[in-house]
Length: 333
Image (cartoon, rainbow, N blue to C red; front, top):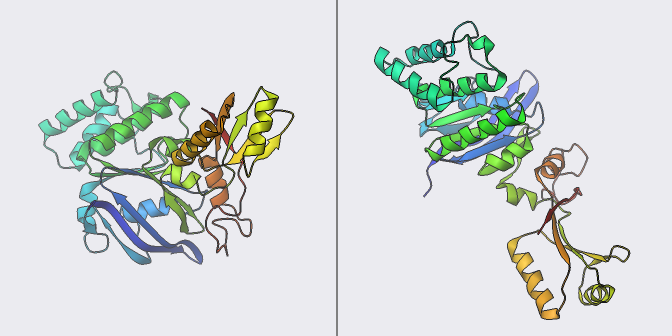
């Protein structure tokens, strides 16, 4: 049985008369990444603050690193690291001094603190800048230093709250590689992000938070299959082959001008294999086969729409993704 690094059930939180979380359930296996997606104000940061013991929940319960959130918050704090939306780096002192300060806060000995600091500065490619004021660092360097400081205490679980916001594409990809390496070493990561590509690239599982609840949760591919609009397109150059295929195939949308056929499909390997087997058996040879699948942008917009009847909208009772059409994205095969 897989051990859970984070297990939350029914988390509720209000600020005054504003209900922020309305029964949030999460399960994050050890050594994996869960990405929490949602629009601004959905409650992502509140989830992080509750699970990292920074604020208390109004209801529900949770276990983090095997410890009960309400009964043993100190043990949880010893097992986790948190990198918030805004850098915790002190710009008035050097990167090395920031690291040594964290070592002191974790009660490391002087020698141990210097050893850990040196190792992490090298790991995060900050050795040359180590003795420069952190205020002179670029955004990517400050973010790397921020995460390095989080790792001083060797946390088993790390909460990353929008860690790449404001970074340029190169710095963002560098941060992705760092996060992947952390998980390879056995660390569990709960990542909140506004970048859907980031969740697609990094997360083992994705949870979409909207209206205070989890609207859908699964792998990125599972969530994409919730959204209608996926299909396979066959394109022909031979009009006779096109007519033969159009006659033989069922549930097909024709484009006589482009000599292309559109067949509904979820893009799964099973469906593609079935289609290819059928084409071979029927003697149909298309010049081009293109798979069109919704992406996480489509999932996000569908699940967080406030349109009545849309998945994630107030009053929705249908299955997620059954009522909102999606713009399909193309992947040539």
